[in-house]
Image 1 (spheres, one colour):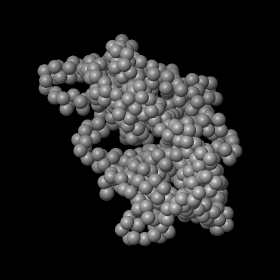
Image 2 (image 1 turned 60 degrees about the vertical axis):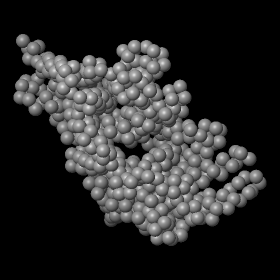
Image 3 (image 1 turned 90 degrees about the vertical axis):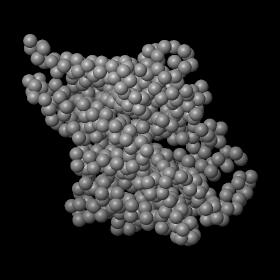
Image 4 (image 1 turned 180 degrees about the vertical axis):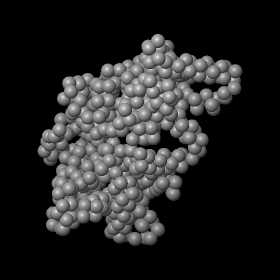
Length: 324
Length: 292
């Protein structure tokens, strides 16, 4: 009974998630949701995956990375090459996308471990740009004109990937490894002194985060028919960063909610891209001036419910609001 | 000869990077902040210069001075509104604010005047080609180099020979101690932002003359590269920024000269990552141990 009490929140969420899946599946099958809504929904899911994966790197491990679009691009192109050039099934494409992006995460993660804060931010930004410029110059993947990709992303795929992403990141956060990552965020030198292998955990966070960004890239590539290097510039990285920052540096549900809300907002402002960016940037500045930890801080949505009180400490890190 | 030609081109380009990098390095030296909006101040300077020439019909020097003045004011406003309230906040919050300010400047510019590019009038500087031992040097690049050098010398003079320069050096060394010695730290930081931004504005006008085409998002890439230049020379060190800028310009020109012009932008970031890995303090920097 004690176990049930402790894991009740988890199982309720899983059941709710599957109910959501079934409802949407039925709505799509019955044609209630038109193409526009399905597009928005898929885009929302992709953004949530990106936000969650960056949350693991910035919010949990405190490694300020602003080249996330680079990993996204690696995933998109890797999966597109698998399915379009090598004619392999979509599942292989998705998996390759994740693995390729994770490798890219290792490549950038290992050397940049010597860097902190601002320097790491700039190095990751540089990495994102290198990926974009490399894609621009490789004729095999179409250069600047990009690659055409067939539409293979379906709702079950999107849901499955999203579900696994959230599950893995939430559980990782609550595991020993996640605790170690949080201690690195709070104070790297102190964590090191306590015997935590900071190098190992920083690289692990980078690799896992970029793995899921790569999978999001695969879904994106196979949903939008065409991928071009210009889709993966640092404006995309900043978009993802904004989800994480607004949601709260250190709050998974915050990042998810921010990604969902901002996707809706940007869908409505699609015809006014300048206005959208002006609103984004003003909100970003105001949030940083008045609430530097983001809207949710390190709190999770679940901590709003009373019955979580019994299991305090789940994902609520004692309300301490220090990041980096 | 080809090599020397590339070297000449590289130095002209590098002097633009150096001017922007000086602003980065000064601001970083004094408040330990990567001012992401610096590249956009550079863009604003370029547009102010452009409008001064096309609408007011002024010549090169007044356009340059107008752009510098406008950017100095803009830099001070940015500092007062966005960075000053965050002086004791976490580094990550300041960095994100800087990104926000950068996006805001870019998109407000697009909102006000549209995203279409503009062509700098080519009559602003006399365009004659000098041939020296088979190397073609345009009079424009000489002007550009000359202007940059004058500004850099002026900056050295301000930093080392004036009262405000002394205050800037003191604040960058230890802001708390400087405050105790009666230095107005806030005003000094404002002055640093003003001087750095004015240099970026000048670089904007020069860039417009050199490349002809200007547009609202043009600040991003030169801004980032100037940051690379600042890191290359050792961030916070003024001569380092100059050398880093020139070096970066020359390397880029050599990469183009070798036939990899499409990889030119990539080269800067590869250099950045290499320098961060092997010599994080930059070419001129000393390693500082972090105390627990």
